[in-house]
Length: 128
Image (cartoon, rainbow, N blue to C red; front, side):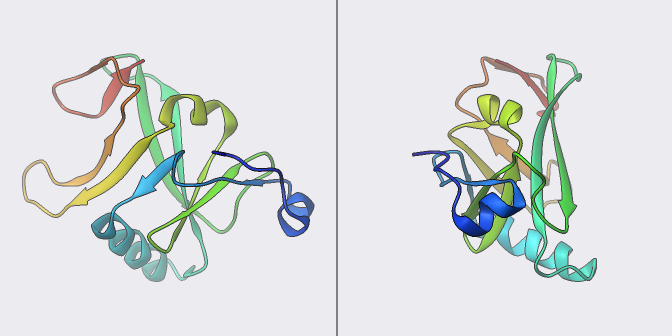
């Protein structure tokens, strides 16, 4: 199940627990996220992955580091990193993989999304 029923601790906080069928984080992406969280002084924080309107192809990813999940979020733990996705964005990212490539050109976080019908040449936006 991508998003299971809330547990006692998660229901008090207002979020649900999901699994890697929603989003999976590679080892290299997990290392980078942990590094960024530590630099920001929030080693127990979460990575928020959201999908917003915009970009060349109509939809774009937004990633942000936060202290904890918000109400109604789906929390997934993958490669030792906590990722949160809001229910609307979950419709677009289900089955995706988040990777990180350390390269001078074309490096950074990359989302491999099986739901993306088209992507732009810069790789920053997609359509579903």
